[in-house]
Length: 145
Figure (cartoon, rainbow, N blue to C red):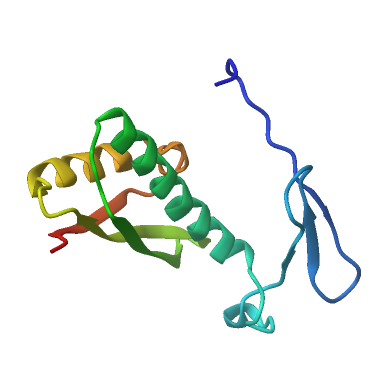
């Protein structure tokens, strides 16, 4: 890992109407638009969905790193993240973030260890650690047969 601080750069451009083009060196371009709740088309990634996506993506990558360091054998992890946007004191902001995680372990796996690793991943996720809103993790660990 490179020493801190790290910098992440995104170039963005748009015209008077239409989508926003997002670019970052070495990554595929993304197209973003307002969500349908704000009058957008509803068929593109929006800043709101990108925000929630960043939380769940970071959680998954944190889990992968913590599981490797903890020598946890696992089969798969599926997550659904839900961010709730609301108006509080005349300011629109995210007021809740929930991650539902389903972790599958091999037949000889430990449910308790899986639960601990999921909690550790949530605690070490740099994106959720950077938020003003508390992230709630609800997890389920199963053993594959």
